[in-house]
Length: 633
Ligand code: FEO
Ligand code: CA
Ligand code: CA
Image (cartoon, helix red, strand yellow):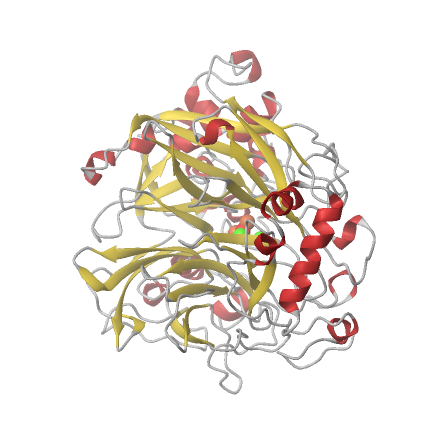
């Protein structure tokens, strides 16, 4: 398809009369289509009348796709850079060296690479100050090293480890604009060599002991930190995702046991290549190191000297994010997805209630509780947006077949091998669960199922919440817990949206659900967030080729949905090769922080500085409205 300049309607949009001016009309048409489809949304419209269908939370004009190396926003919005990869956190810190020759020591005190999930923590008593805890998921060797290849020394491995983990930074509002505070005493890097405590039921288990740590309680580092969570008691949760990619084996005869296989450890670590230089990542030399990663890590952002804690009660898998909720009885609930084709959705419920009067009393709340995994029924096979029912199955040693005969001698082993335990209880294999969020309005839970080209193969049945074989576009699942109580053991689910390309594949399941049209199409939903008004923000990490099945989708982007009407509008488009991931808001919701990860992943970008011959740098952006209003309203 011919590409036009950013902000211009595409040929196809003109063809169907969908310009920005007519977008609201398109939304109404979309509602009418849903009504004819006889689904849940249309029943809502029937009950509340046409005016309800027209009433929307979305107060901005949806924008066209774009392929430029810049940020596109609706009219009246502006973006600036808060912080970029390599920026020194301290006033006297080493400057970013674009040559790639900067040292590991320098990277350990600079903003990490490939920022992902983030949470904002208002500074008590200081309305113009806050902390942002920001994940640094991985690093791009093309830009990290001058040679642009996999690391070639222990020092280079150390630099890669330093580029990952978490950055905690102070931000302050000056002249109405939030800015990074270089030199704040709160600024901190937690990276792949930072001391971290292991706690909870698996801490101290033999499988977590190494030559360097005979206690099995003192790990080194967190890396591959994807998305995040924020607890009601003021701590940050960072989630270790593709940790097994960092491990390999120097032994040509290496026997990969069932645990290594299920978590994806292979002889040659996928392109990351740390194990030839750092024996910690060589499973032949350090077989248990890999078990000390793949956890949710809790951080107190207000105490720069605190030791982060890996909470093993939440299970070990490729954690995407951690969404906090509360049961009606006041216990903490953590919803979590395992981002791998055919893996699962989990829920943890704490044993103890949250002490709202004394935040510090919740320090070890996530060490005691029960882990569950989701089982979905086949649903009603509605061709637009199916719905059905599901239940939570407990992953506790001695229950549901989780015994020694199944390979689990105690709860520690259930948690370390949570994937294997979830398979024993026949959890439902999902289309790559990414972020999960809980609506502040009605407690419904939304989860992006980003895509799964193996659906239909490999023993993964097509149906229920995973309705398409070779799913290349993804969908957003939601569920409502029975009695609207997060402690429930059953729920009702539906698909909020099925992404697709109605222009390239009209009239087929690849067109997506009725709330997808030529003006808002996208693929691979990933990041999610609700704002206080209940707008659902959707970020994408998909195919940005803008060709073939993905024609008309442009660069990765962020959209905004009205959960009630189902309407979705495109709000932002990122630069070339980026993924839009990570989102947070200032307390007044008049500033939004958005992450742009790996611009120019495969070249073709110099975002954001656009220096001749310059390198692209992952960045956190500050989005505001020219009239100072609430974002999205
Ligand atoms: Fe780091 Fe599944 O995204
Ligand atoms: Ca993601
Ligand atoms: Ca993704």
